[in-house]
Length: 185
Image 1 (cartoon, rainbow, N blue to C red):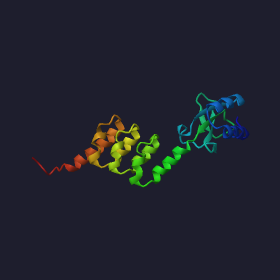
Image 2: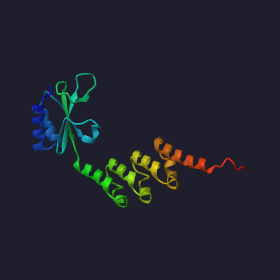
Image 3: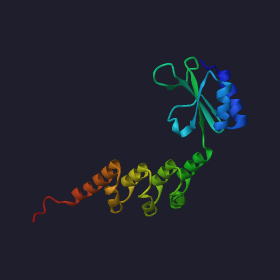
Image 4: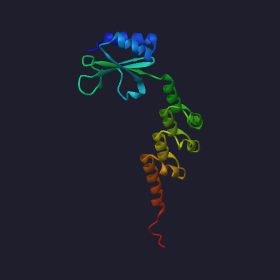
């Protein structure tokens, strides 16, 4: 069991000291009866935190069974995930969603794949060509599904099967539309 008061104490220490490996080491000594894990918030998934603070979120873990799982139940909680929130990343995602499409070329090489994915959803076709070799398959997948057909031929040879499938399906549909069964040779 991890009562809300213990989370208050934990959060107060992290607010004052910052969330890093050194703080985590001190927290593990201070809260030796609790299992503590540190990660980036984006690695947690879609679960809502039990507590959200500027720069970090807290998630409860139930480790009573053979598999650990996130929980919101303080009674069954045996540990806490301290998840660092990267505010700069969230700002860049918001900018990618709001920036005029003609200005998105400035964000094509953002270090975060989720930002580049947002860019790939909205960037003009001519600017998107530079993203067709993106390291993240999801970016190439998105481009294969939205770029003009004349541009997606290279994606039909992509290393990722899902990207190839989308590009090939779109290209095949165009070839089928171009074939007129009334025309015989």
